[in-house]
Structure formats: C-alpha cells, structure tokens
Image 1: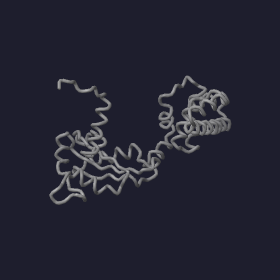
Image 2: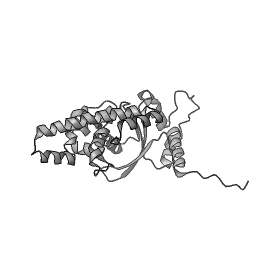
Image 3: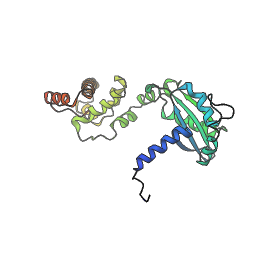
Image 4: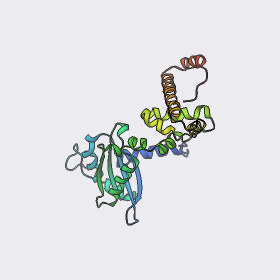
Length: 248
C-alpha cells in the first residue's frame, strides 16, 4: 500500500495500446481523409495478408458472431459501438499481397481509401492483391528515376563522394530493383552528371560508368550480406584482410 506505480516509457505504453487495438478492436492503422464535400472521415484499417481470414475479419468489424461462437455468444457485438465511441466513422479490412514486390503503389492505395471514404458503406473489404503492373509500387517507382533517386538517397551524406553513389545503388539493389532501372536512376546522380559533362556528354562512357557502379555495388552488397551472417570475430578478421569498406 502507498507504493507508486513503476515508470513505464511512453513508447512501451503506445506499443501496448497498439496491441490492444489490433487484438480487441481490429485496428492496425487509423486514417483521416476529406471526402469530396470537404468532410473529414476517420477510417480504422485492419491490415492482413491472409485472405482466408477475410470473412472472419469482416464479421468482426461488423459486430457479427464468428464461426466458433454460438447464437448467444457474440464477442464482437460491441465493436461497432466501441469504434464509434473512439471517433471512427468507417472500418475497412485491407488485404495486401504477402510478396513485397506486388504491394500497391501509394497512388493505388490512396485512391482505394478515398473511394471507400466517398461510399455509403461503413465497413468493407479492400482486396489489393491482384494489381495491374502500373498499379504496383515497384513498377511505378522504376518508371520515375527522379523519385527513385530521392527515395534511396534520402538521409545519406552527398559530401562523402567516395561512398555516396555506392550507398544509393546498394539500397536500390537490396530492394531488388532491376539493373536497368538502377542505371536510369543513376542519371539523376549529381556526380554522374559531372562525369558526363567532363567527358563531353559521351553517353557510351557514361553507360560504361553506370555499368561499373552497379557491378561493384553488387559485389559490396554480397560481401555486406555475407558479413551479416558471420560471427563478430569472423567479421573483424575479414575487415583486416579487406581494409575499409564504403559503408554499404
């Protein structure tokens, strides 16, 4: 009696809140968007890659009993009421492909959410597993070299010229982009552009430069991944043999 409660960090509290939201109220993400009338719509999102659970999840967010529940035992019946009390107008089950390369593009995802916000339905399922190539995030990104360069150069230090380009290319390689898309992305590299200008705009030399960058970056990524599977002692021994790396 009289003892104070132990200190609990804010991030731990939030983690527990997120756990309860997911397990109890079927909410992974909360969104707020404005419909065409300028009215803000709060949407609760339950995300899954398991399409076999679609019917169960939809029953849950609608407050209907699950398959395992008897006629008089509905553990879901309060969910619509709780959702309203929490300030959510709508609830959606979002089904995504479990293959990262086939996830929807940002535009496809947002357009689907906005279409739901405009609808009269309070609950629905958005199945975004089957997509056209242009609707996939990777395809869309690879057709926009400026955006691709910005994505993979974000947070890096461009003043470290010896490592900068290799780090950007290394990130793109780890994301499994094609060699050709990475070479096109490289045309947005300021150092690549300087290289081209210094050689009178010779595209053959520039292409050779891009090929060399990608080839060497692949070797560095392979070495980095191999090191990640080694013990600390093995890593130190290999660093002594190889000398300093470029930080990929």
